[in-house]
Figure 1: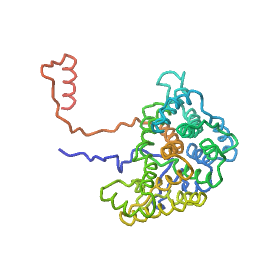
Figure 2: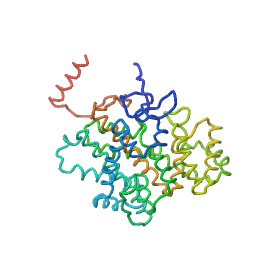
Figure 3: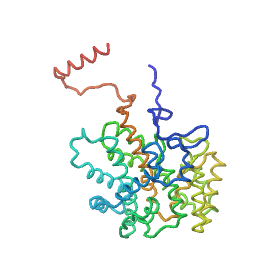
Figure 4: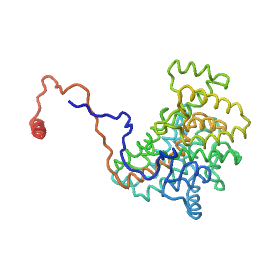
Length: 396
């Protein structure tokens, strides 16, 4: 019997077409709708990149003004979403909090929409839902961090752009432009990355004609894992464990001897280094200078240098983003929710794209369990006998 060619983890399997993003193998650049992400991060506000992912083109000034007006009108937490957050234990992981809040937001938004047959909505419906999620997630994430610190909620401001308002709601002070720029760049770099695990999860759920919020909740669950979005948290835990650049060699000796997985290095897609890293490293360098923390840069450079020299594996985006978020003041457990706030733009763009040319995603598997067996004394009824006979006839 021929053994099937099983691609564990779907490695190397092309499952569909997408016009949203790709990695250009010739330049090693991640492209959003054709634009290199480093160019977008250097020149665009996050709202413009969100518009690009949803609509295929960068917005005109008028279109950007319209998007910003809609986003700012939907920032504040409704009472039911805030109540759901408050019911989440403060010692639960904040990804559980974010997942719950999005689920409640979706239930409220879809209330009265009828049966599950009506849940998926039109492309126009889903674009409106995408913008509402985009607007609400910073409030959810910011309030979550403040709540865990025993601090009160800070209402959004409609005179600040997306990134500046996100930082305002989290820390209660108007951020320095250097910090806003670094944070904005990180959001853009995390916004989209083709058929990654969480995006594919969202597309699978969408393929069943479920609603956009269910797809996003599923994506959040996938992103929580340390092999995906949770990796940026793991990087900071490693930095905390090492302590300083002087301890890198001894720490890495022990980690490699014990075959520990070093998070923040390597990527299934990038074989010559993650193209997003130089842009995020520049943002980190600006924060190191702003906060006068050369010790962070020394530890970063020491660990990268040692690991690349020994293993030939280069950093991915999580490696510079973890210490950058730490310098800004985000708690380590908030890092992955920040990823959600960014990636929701890519997820929802893929949900809309999947819906536009949908086919139910239902792969096959190869069974390797026990052969057919039966319960002693069981006698099939007439309908079962007929069904078995039809199956045997079809096989023959």
